Length: 80
Image (cartoon, rainbow, N blue to C red; front, side):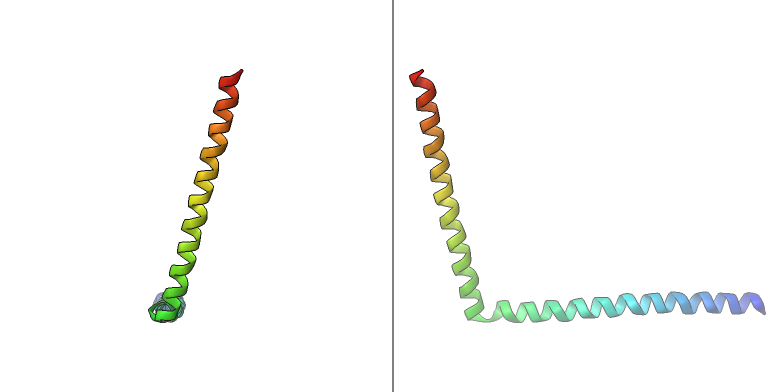
């Protein structure tokens, strides 16, 4: 009888752990659904696109600046 009680107690503990994991998954799913609603909003999408365009422009400027700096460094080394 004690063995059955111990097994039942173990099963209940495992079920509680599974319930906690399922609750965490449900909370994550709710958060993801909210994020998807934000992204699905055309205004939010436009804002994200504008931010990406800005970052791409800045990246292009930095690439150009690096090219110029490397070229100046190469010219200085060649002049020596």
